Image 1 (spheres, one colour):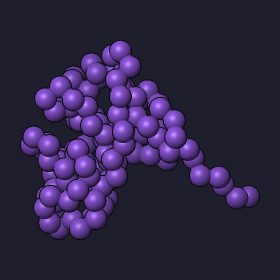
Image 2 (spheres, helix red, strand yellow; image 1 turned 30 degrees about the vertical axis):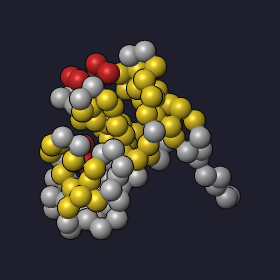
Image 3 (cartoon, one colour; image 1 turned 135 degrees about the horizontal axis):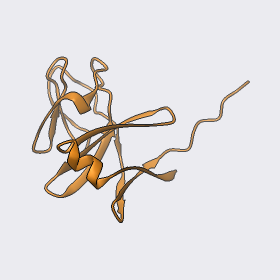
Image 4 (spheres, one colour; image 1 turned 90 degrees about the horizontal axis):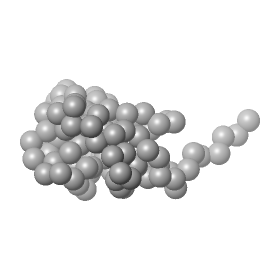
Length: 110
């Protein structure tokens, strides 16, 4: 696991509390709610839509494709049609920078 600086708080606030980022093979959505930052996979587990394009209501992100809901704190499904939770990533602030803990890349076989 490695901590990767992925965005600044200013970037996230300028994006109204939802931001999309990519690092290696990971598509990550960042959210700010009540002054705390959260990170999930940016892909809905139901239809593959970008969660960062959905509607954020408190701690719930609504998928823009089929309106499924996820809790951004835990990744848990909070509404159908989604059935599988979305992956969450640990977050820490390093000054004004948002760092996300990313798993080490899987070895590739050649």
